[in-house]
Length: 244
Length: 203
Image 1: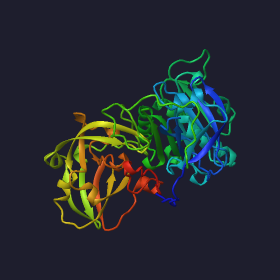
Image 2: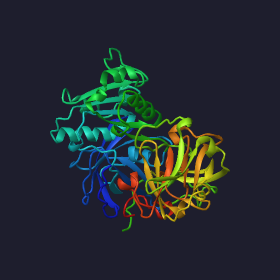
Image 3: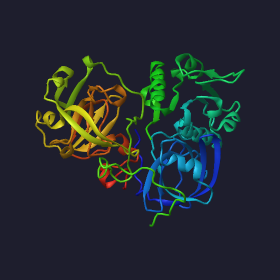
C-alpha cells in the first residue's frame, strides 16, 4: 500500500451554504463555500460540526459529492431518528453557516492513475462517493471504462438520476429497484445477486477495480459475490454506513 | 476560533445519566453495531486459524484455535468508540488478555503491528496491549463473534478508537520501532486516543 504524505492538522473552517438541492423526498445536496479548502479527491469525506445557540456541538462525517476541483458539496439522507440529518435536510438554507474539516480518507478514492476498468456498486445513499468518482472520471477526460450498478428501493429513491442518465454510453449506469418497479421498467429488479453481476461485472481477467458503498449487509453481500467471481480482495474497496 | 451558531440547530437528546461522562468529545451513542471495513470480509476456517507472535521474521509462538480456546478467558464490559463518531456503551465480550499471550514469549519490543486476514494492519505500543487493556476477543454479547465484526477473533483495545481493535487478527509483529498500519497510512492518527480526539494525523 502506498503511504500518503502526512499533512498538518486538519483544522475546522467556517463553511457557508450556497445552495440546497432536493435530490429525492429525503435527500438534499448541500453546496458549500469554503474559502480555505485545500482540495479533495473523489471518494473522500469530510467532518461537519454544528453548534447550537447554547454551545452544544454535534459532529458527523459525510462523503463529498463533488469531483476533484469542484466546489465542495455533500449529499445527506434524512434519518428520522437522527439529530443532524433532519436539520441538514429540512432546516438548512443558503447563507447558513457550519464548520467543516477535511478532506479525510485516502483509501476509498479514485484518480485517473488508479486505472480500471471501474466497477462501482451503490446501495441507497452509498452512491454519493461513487458519483464523485464518475464526475471526476468524466471531467478529467479519462478513458477508463466504468460501470455503475445502483440499488434503490424505488425509482423515486434514486439520487442524481438525471445526471447519471446523461452519461449515455461513456459510463454504463444500471439500476436495480428492490421494493417496487414502475410499469414497463427496463432495469433490474430485486437485490444485487450473482445473475446481475454476471451481466454487469467486468471479468476478473480484466483486472477491474471495484468500489462498493452502501449499508453494511449490502456491502457484505456484494463484496462476497465479487470475491467469488475471483476479484482480488485488494481490488475490492468498500465503504459501509450504518447506525445513526 | 469561536464556532458560528448553526441557525436553527438544537440538541434533540440529552445524554442520559448512564451516558454522562462516558462519551468522548465529538462522539454520539448508537445502539446499533455499525461496521467499518476497507474490503471484503475474510472467512478463515478454524482448522486453518492460528494466532502468531512474530519478531524479526521469526515466529516466537503460535496458537491453534483449540490451543487459543484453552487459554484462560475473561468477560470484559467496555465502551467502544469508532472514529466515525459512534460510541457503543457497555458492550460485553469474552477474550484472552493479550498480556497472557505476550507473557509466553521473551521480547523487549516497545511496538506491535497487529496483522489480519485480508492484509489489514494496525500499530499499537506494546504498553497499550499489556496489563488489562487489550484482549483477543472471540465472543460478543454471548455469541461467537460474527465475521463482519471480526470473527473468529479480533483485538479488543477499548481505550483507543476502534480501528485499533483489528478484526480477523492473526498475530502481532513485535517491533523495535513504530510502524504505521493500514488506516494510519491513510491519514488517521498514529495513536488514536478518543478522549484526546486523536482522529486524524496531526490531531
